[in-house]
Image 1 (cartoon, protein in one colour):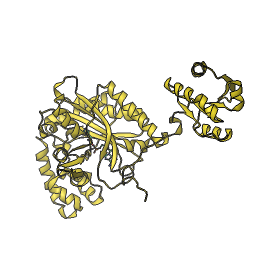
Image 2 (cartoon, helix red, strand yellow):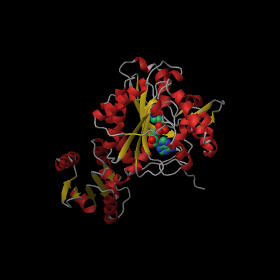
Image 3 (spheres, rainbow, N blue to C red):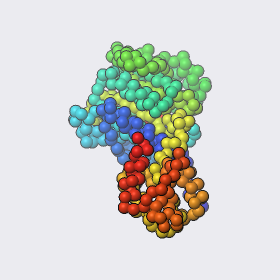
Image 4 (cartoon, rainbow, N blue to C red):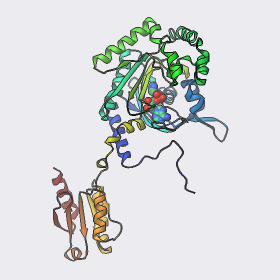
Length: 424
Ligand code: HAM
């Protein structure tokens, strides 16, 4: 029996993988301009890290974590997101004490045991960015601006930034109380999940997709109307800075997040064309998480973009042209010819050219067909008569021009010069 990949986990290969690399590179370049440094954390962590950060009563921790005992019985979890791991790493290595190290990004796979569907997978990839140490709303606005700028730079259009404020440890508890009082009036009408959330995590009711629950929630008190003065001013300032850089947004009073660590700013970037899973990115402020994980009391804000969802949205862009075409494709028509240019091909590669070899001594026609499939820009052909003349045929596949190339100690240099002249 053939062994296949695990459900909800994909292989990524050409030509998509070229687009992935391009996007990752774009993120790296852009994030560097904003002062971010890369951090790479393990994909496996102690299970308690996520339970304590994302929240015991969230769907992620309750239902979606890949948690398993190792050989000695320690409970480990495949990371469902990057924020908790990055915060752990910062605390562990005291990176917060280094003044120039306040911004971190990572790119890599995350794991959630969700029911796979379009845009929702069990292994997916995030581009994640975190800014630590600043309470000022200018940082929230800059994080959102960066997320939007990055998505726009990938070529994405028609995306919407939705923002909300979730309050703080001062104003949220009394709000929660009011919300529960309201929701209790409809206790028997909620879906099974929301009935459970009512007591454990009432704000999550706002995220329910079941029509009956949505209707009840539409009349519920909104967290934005219960903000304390500090949170209100913070939110206003976030909006001010977004306006300042003409970063469009919508205040979505129903927006809550699937992770518990957020306070004040929460945001999502949504796009049409993703179906039910319409968020291509999301994030917010999480001022209490460092202390929650036993570290110093440091404010922070961040976001993550889902690569697979971004790729779905960019699908039209995935074209073969992104795959690099060979500069030279060598066609040998007999063994002796192949012996002649095996070394030459390796030297040209060392000097930076992309070179393909016809490894099989097939007919000229069949080898030309293969060279064409690669989209080669030049083909070099050597057969019996070329060997006799100590030459090769160099064919420019775009212009169809053919010339004779002497095969001697100088061939490598002549080729490099010829090709770089053509590229001028
Ligand atoms: P999140 O909203 O859970 O936030 O995930 C961020 C993005 O990851 C989503 O908007 C989506 O594009 C993608 N994503 C999530 N789950 C899946 C899935 N099962 N399949 C495919 N894509 C998925 C976080 O993870 C936070 N750590 C973001 C953050 C960083 N907040 C502060 N800093």
